[in-house]
Structure formats: C-alpha cells, structure tokens
Image (cartoon, rainbow, N blue to C red; front, top):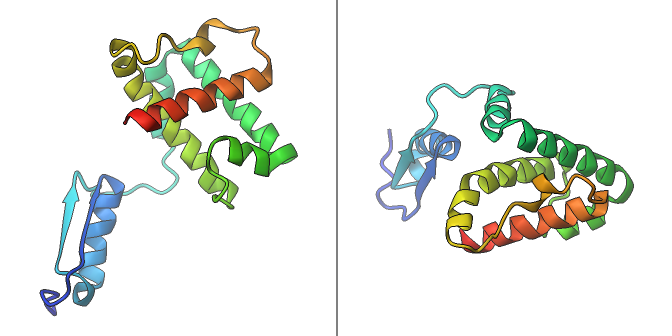
Length: 155
C-alpha cells in the first residue's frame, strides 16, 4: 500500500460515516494521510428497516402515531408543493426527495434524543404536538419546523 503521508487530507466519521472513512482510506491511500472511524459499522445492512422499527418502539405509541402522521403530511406536501415544503425546513438545496426524507427522518430521531435535554434546560417548554390532536395539518408541519430549527440551533 502506498503511504499517503505526503497528503494532508485526514478522513474521519462516526457510525456509517466512520465505516465510509475507513473504506476511503483503504480504497484511496494515496489521497489521505489517515482515517479515524469512531464506532464504524462493521456489517452495513442495505435497506435496514429495523432501525425505524426501534425508533417507533422507543418513541412510544403517541409519538409514533404523530411521526407517522407527519410522514403522511410530508408525503402529501411533496406531491403538491415540493419546493415550498423543502424551503420551510431550510432544505431547499436537497433536490432529491429521498435525501430530503432522510434529512427529516434523522431530524426526528435527533428531536427525540435531544428533547429531554431541551426540556431540562427550559428551552422547549413542551413538545406540543403530542397534546394537540386538533391542530390543522399546516400547524402541525409549522410546529415541527419550529422544533427542528430550535434543536438544530442548540445542538
């Protein structure tokens, strides 16, 4: 293997991106001087749906139902007003709908992960959408946008 010591690029990642950084170093040793793969996935699984199932179980029945409702709203909005929906979430540059949906799925997991911290810091008084079943579809999406923007700003 050719050493990349003369090259100043160092690749790193965590989880799946960690696996990618290790693969990149192996595949292109002449382009990098090193790689750090923190918690790198050893056996990547294509189309891994068990992760989504676990998120649903961890969220609990009420939150899972809300996540499913939001997913339906997003799917409907993508069909009717794709550009405006992506703009609302600050993701207008994501031209591929699948990328946008991955962004939202990751954001939902981050929201569940950081919500207790935000509640503890009193930066997020409560996650409203669980207690407001009569909200309009527009209000539900606007609330999700607000919560995600708050989480992204704080983390």
